[in-house]
Amino acid sequence: MCFKQNISQTKRSLEVFCVLALFIGVAASVRAGEYTIDKTLDGVLVTTGVGSAVASEFLLQASNPDLGSLDKSSINGFDRSAMFSSSSSLDTLSSVLVIGQALSPVAFGFFLSRDQSLAAAAVYAEAFSFAYLTKNLLKYALPRYRPYVYSGDKENAALMNTDEYDSFPSGHTTVAFAAATFSVYTYNLYFPDSPYFLHFALANYGLASLTALLRVTSGNHFLTDVLAGAAIGTAFGYVIPALHAKQSSSPEEKRISFFLVPGGVMVDIKLY
Image (cartoon, rainbow, N blue to C red; front, side, top):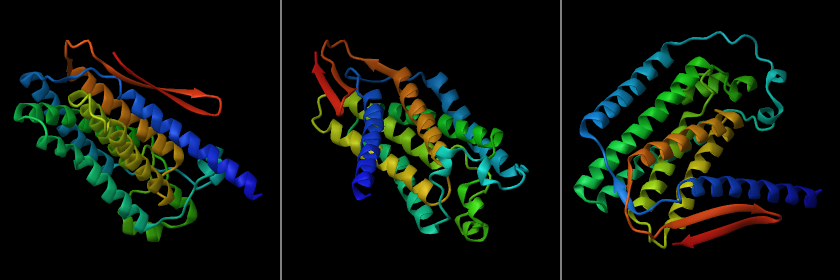
């Protein structure tokens, strides 16, 4: 029994590593360059994005859907395999982590010039606000009970200040992966020759994954909630910066590729 359990845990660990490798690979193939912005266009986008994100929060709080009776059998098997009761301590820890990660891109201001920092800030504001807006619109359009509701933990969960029908997708996970992907992309864009890239990427996605794990174990979200949040955050954290990245004319390019092979993962690093 213990042997089978260890095999199962090993497979799960490998799956987690492969997911992290995929996220890192998404942001790893970038030429050295910098962000360029159009003051008028990006000014409108930042204002619109932030304003819409704030407005969507009020819209979400005003909603009060009737989701009917609580029936665990209506939950798919994948989500039902990881349902937890409410935990205010794990909820608080996940909130502390996501706030820290959301603010972490500010650190680029210490290593970039003033103009570079302002451009990066505008790009991050767009990626963050549109990811936040998207997750709120999905929460409004697709209301879903949180896992703790099925355990009868409404009284304890009230201390966490969470709405019981805002489960899908996970907002904390969306923010964490948006910040992580933006940070990894930006780091590789401005510091393509850094020997610490892989460490930086693993640290960022490791923290984002820990946030997702805590959202599940705190009883706030199902597995599909955090997977959707990770997808939304990664998409905006990559696409928005990619649209603003001005590549250098240097022929040198650093590329890190990950391939799944029998028995593990192969890493291919090329400089050309």
